[in-house]
Length: 196
Image (cartoon, rainbow, N blue to C red; front, side, top):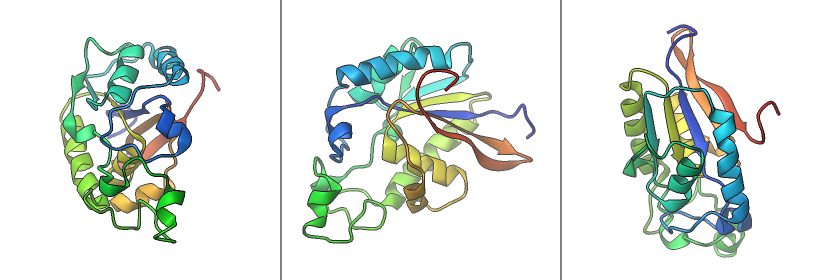
């Protein structure tokens, strides 16, 4: 598994109203903002010239539209395992709002009533990793902030909850791969135009 080993590229969707406001956006299917659409379109230049054996996207509009605007709509497959964390009763609420009743709460350490645990999300991420690893080449994933943070942690052999330390901006690109046979995070949370 040397330099030429396959990589998994991760793209978080562009900005939405709720990503801007800090509201937990799990299964609510809200669209990209105008800024988010521009961010997504800008991904096309940043991903240009790369070949992927498999392109998967969350079916939720904010991820799927990012995939389309980035130029991969003709090859991408929808993948339900890439949908965002199910926030249950906390859907649409900010961490600050939740902490009014649960002072030390975070998505990574707290309970999520009627939603998924970090371990549930980790199981979905592991299935995506298995599918990507069997693709026979580089893989490109379009998905969501918390799901991709869990996926990065699981890839690196960490607990799903360790995704807490992997910040991820909108329309960011990250890459997972190998170094001397060990799964590593090669690049994380790169945003902005090429060369920045």
